[in-house]
Length: 343
Length: 206
Image 1 (cartoon, rainbow over the protein chains, first blue to last red):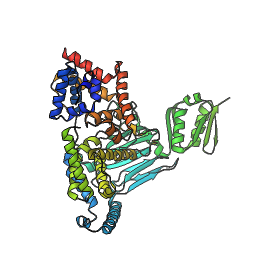
Image 2: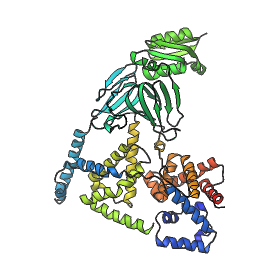
Image 3: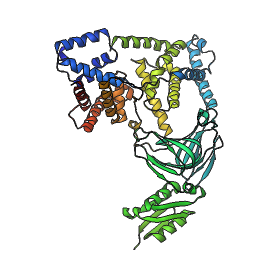
Image 4: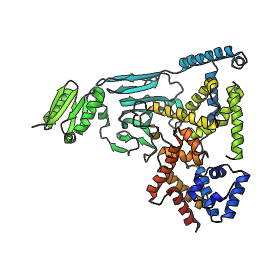
């Protein structure tokens, strides 16, 4: 190979040069000679070559995950999935038509086997304003708020207990771990949200995961949050009773302490509970949980705040409370709510 | 492409052809030759080992059941990387399926390498590693992935473009962006990653 093209190479040029990068990653005897020749002909290149190769080799000294302990296990699973066609090796010595037939049989029987053996996915989906208590396979319960979705496999034996939530739910998780120092996979309970996973040991806690952000309030027990994004300063966070954490994908985490954490579960009794809430916060709940469409005649109205606690049993009373405490007029037609300034 | 690489790929290509003929041993070999590197690549997208294992399972089931219709890829390894990547993305997406994803294109899937277990005694190299680590972390995931495929897997731009399902000019653009972004961080001149690392060398060497 001609060495002349390297006479004026910069460090960047080397990093962009396929031959160079490959020779650093996977050197052969020839490569060594080539770069020696370049360095001999253009002494200025010697250090640049050394530096470029140091950058690459240093970058390459990174952690490797081979998962080799599970190599056999995953293979057995693959083989088992394909095992449904018994005389596999023989079939392929048969003629073309039989091969096609066997292939069809293989494919369809794999499909049937997958369908039969796979734990089925359960999906619970609540309409606006309606609560539902879900009993999970292990005896844990979830009270789902309106406009919320919960999904899980109907068969949990030996697998970690896993649920996916979008919306709000109050979890009451059954404690099945005997020894807190060794948690078996089947004893784990994980709640997946869009931006975090919540790892649980027998506990009561509230999750509200909407619009790509998640609020978690812990009433009792202990849970660990594992953020899905790497950007959050901390990878995970252990919560203690009374902790209330708000997190959004790639946004900072806020953490406050609730003096009376059980209040965050009020919605499960169809109670609407707010504390020093702005109209924006209140309208979010009415929109997300009850399906109202709330519009404001001017944007500054959304920042109006009701000091103190509101605790009402339904939206009608909530509207009543707002219109008596704040200088606003509320018009409600079916599911549309319009909030205007009071004249 | 270096000598070893070619030999390795030839070997894989022979295995691939035998596998397509329905040779179970070849299929097993294909699995055993790639299980570790597929895990390593998958681990960059998710730390959930179950997701990676499920994806590898699905990938190999799909290979066996679809093998009459499969082509002959130039590089078997690249083909497996590409397939695994798209299966993992689909799995990660379905995990968050209740979230509206219209503005969350695939560029939001994480990509993370780690140096935590690397013990480097040489001080100069340690300093360089710190710099690299710092700058890499500031890049968006897809740019980090390009750097990984380029300098860890040793792939060319055309191969990277194929695996990441972008066109070659986007691959170029992305790597320039990677340099550019670093420039912003460093407030230094063009090709900042390189120059920054280079200057760090100079300082350390004198």
